Length: 262
Image 1 (cartoon, rainbow, N blue to C red):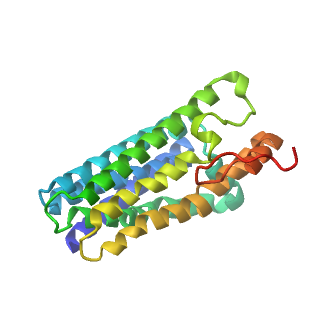
Image 2 (image 1 turned 90 degrees about the vertical axis):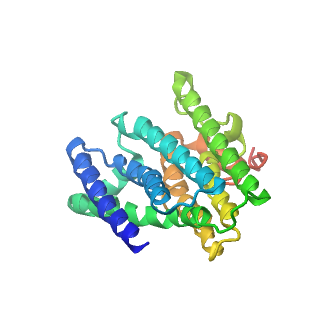
């Protein structure tokens, strides 16, 4: 076990540093998000090949992680890297840090690897679960994962379709899932990690699998997700987004409310 994590961090830090050098060259720090998403998929594959028992649960857990990692990595590459436009979050950080931005962004890139290790923990508990037979909890975990993956893909497509229409410039997307949550993509991203909680039930220290949804909620709701997205939307859409804030839940989907001032 120790040997695996040694190589995970060694290779991971090397890849993160390489990505940092590429980011400096092309002047696009948004590439950092692909480091985290990609390292989780590759780390899960390496762990499974190194330790994984040949159980249906372990194989399903790996397939889900590879699909999640691959889809998110490709989405980030298309949306934030190949577009050549810096993510507003990192543009704001670069402006705030000024001359120290280059050095501080090195830390941002390198810290993705310890974060990936934390989110790999629920996966390792699922793969090493000593319960050999497929259980109803495993079916529940699979259902949660498929629902979350499908919901996130639908939310991304609805937003992309809305933004692709020039007539919607400066407007707020209220189509489909975006009518019930201001960040349905983040909600489904959080929901996905409960799949590994269900897979891990019965394993030693299974409660540690909760670190996935707990940490994801903290990051998305209070650190790197909602706060930056809200500030960016208020800046670009102004009063239209303030009205959206008054009528639509921030994170958890629910029916829209009537604006008390309307």
